[in-house]
Amino acid sequence: MERKLPVTYELQKKSGKARAGKITAPHGEIETPVFMPVGTQATVKTMTPEELESIGSQIILGNTYHLYLRPGDDLVAKFGGLHKFMNWNKPILTDSGGFQVFSLGSLRKITEKGVEFRSHIDGSKHTLTPEKSIHIQNNLGSDIVMLFDECPPGLSSREYIIPSIERTTRWARRCVEAHQRPDEQGLFAIVQGGIYEDLRDKSLNELSEMDSAFSGYAIGGLAVGEPREDMYRILDYIVEKCPENKPRYLMGVGEPLDMLEAVESGIDMMDCVQPTRIGRHGTVFTKYGRLVIKNASYAEDDRPLDEDCDCYVCRNFKRGYIRHLFKAEEVLGQRLATYHNLYFLLKLMKDARKAILEDRFKEFKDEFIKNYNMGKN
Ligand SMILES: CNc1nc2cc3c(=O)[nH]c(N)nc3c(CCc3ccccc3)c2[nH]1
Ligand SMILES: [Zn+2]
Image (cartoon, rainbow, N blue to C red; front, top):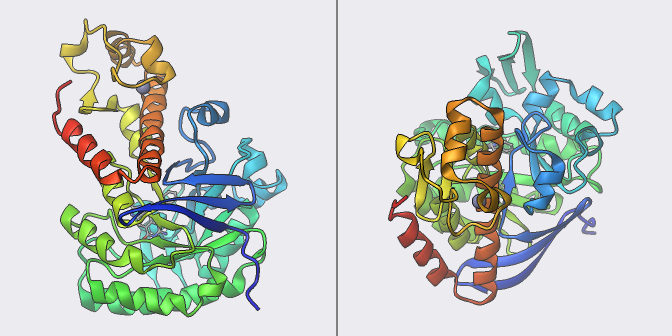
């Protein structure tokens, strides 16, 4: 009989293919669509958990690759798991590590067994396997555990992707077998297949054989250098083929316009390091597009970063002050820009959810895109 899954989804409203829903996870509920801040090394860079909660973060992401290398998943387990270690008491999703090996590790080698690599920290040799990845995530105690997959480089050929999908499916079976807490940590499948519709079908069909083990489905293999129109075409094709009664997670997409495109295709969850990464370098999101605060033109500008934003930063600080902080290399500048960027994306998803509930998502999306492309800052 069907085992009770630890992570469940309730569809609340559709507006076209866009959906509003509620995810129930062991550490709490998540209203979707949702943006998930990335907390790679057990911290969303420069933010405290209290600040993350105050801006409306419902779930954050952690990284198997990083936490295994430092401080070690067994140490995190000694502290009672990642929630206790970092004092975040809402849901956490952890990635499985394969992607990070290829984006950060060196001297990598893929075999049937798994992935051999050298640590980007000290060059030590390691092998990550499906079993090891799942056991690390079990130690971390995340609410949502990702399958150990291969994410082929953007624009890989069909000849490369086909055998890659078949190995990733064999790895998926090993992940399901290795999972030590299937009743406490939800397992998400990851659909691959590059920019080819028929290979997306192949990946989804092979994974669907194990559907009863999966609490959700992620769309992987995108935002890895493929042209934007290819990503949109694939989303429009494959997302609605994923089970309607489970959450759908698009991995690695966090540009405002891409997020709205993803929501329109039926995606519920998204992550991206962009808001925190570009925030630390002084680029912020605004209603009218991106703004590079170090630009000399903002030196005497007494407006907030975004005149339509009601976040703590926009209510209390002016562009000229935040520009000064960056020019003076004051760390408060990075914190304020990060805070506002995260708030901006969390609010964008909250407004998208409201538009879906009121069955006016298309109008909401078109209005946002018109303003964002104005670039008048
Ligand atoms: C930026 N673009 C991007 N495309 C991705 C594709 C995949 C993919 O096909 N498979 C897996 N496992 N992860 C991917 C990721 C990492 C997402 C992430 C980062 C940090 C924390 C938690 C999760 C991606 N990121
Ligand atoms: Zn703001």
